[in-house]
Image (cartoon, rainbow, N blue to C red; front, side, top):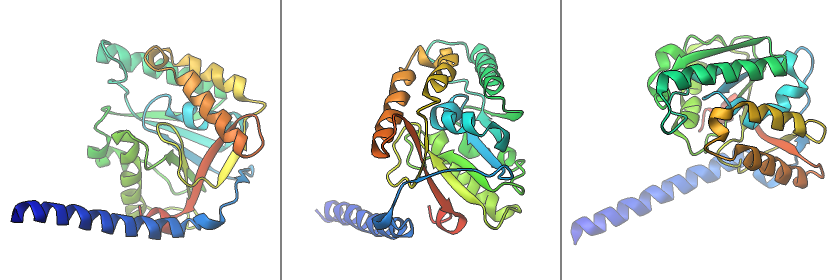
Length: 249
């Protein structure tokens, strides 16, 4: 009976602590005052997009990349070897490399690379991750921290460590994008009305992935819903925060 009460008390205590931390974090977002603003970049803005897997950059930020290809460097962090069911891992790695390169060429992204960390092992590979040079960037785009994929969550943890140990722009902004989970408190968007068809074409390049999951319908439906919130046909939503807020996650 004592052990049972102890477990129940522990569970309630953890929930209480988590709830209070979440409330403080949401206050940092000024969630009660959020107004969706259209995100625009200057020609001089330098952006780094970190994609855990080949395809995340397109699903979450395809419209953004179509609009501002000259502003971005795109880095895919893993080799994507487990992005299938019965596929041979080595063959799938090569297929996903080719798909990623094809998409980058279609987007006219001149600066892109793959770190090649083993899929699903991102959190254990800070030694490779720390090779990234983030000093020059004004924005770093990463997946929503609450995305339901461990590699997606890992990017936040690894980037926090990198920001502690490496030089970066004092006014650097972190931009969360959506893939597996919708952002709870987005504050910026871009209009996809004129680019949604091109984004769909880019999604279709990832044939190794869409044969298992209907990403085309899922992502375009998410973009349609987001567009409805800002009186557009389609939109991508983002949460943009400063370093101080980001480090609280």
